[in-house]
Length: 197
Image (tube, rainbow, N blue to C red; front, side, top):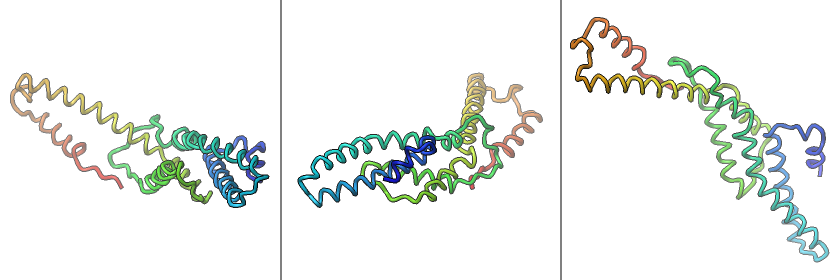
């Protein structure tokens, strides 16, 4: 088989994890077709071959979820997508999620159906999905933004809890000019509507 020799070549051994997943899926398609063809022929002399192919098919099918995991959550593309070593998403920063959501949906569908049918996948389309995942660190930016929001909301909650315990929201018992200014800034810049494109 050409695919096997290509996989065992020096380049095949260092291929990207997405390429390894494609190889494993193609191999499973071909060996399944071979097993079905031998079953249709049903010749007695091919019994040993059928047993060996069934064993290989079982080992490859059991290994496919691990290969899928390595090609998705353990891949460099996912690491870049979810990299939290970046600044958080800024308030007016445009966010384009269509390609990322499409790619994540594609890989999710693929992962859910690994044990039922191995789809015939276009290598170019498959790699395009991986490309979309690594274009931007949007997942990491969103995670950073959520963490920053959580910390700031916890601080605000503590301040409001302390104020409600003393029954004085305004430290001097009345609204000050500085307090009014801070409230207006907060409302204008932080409490305004945010939109994701």
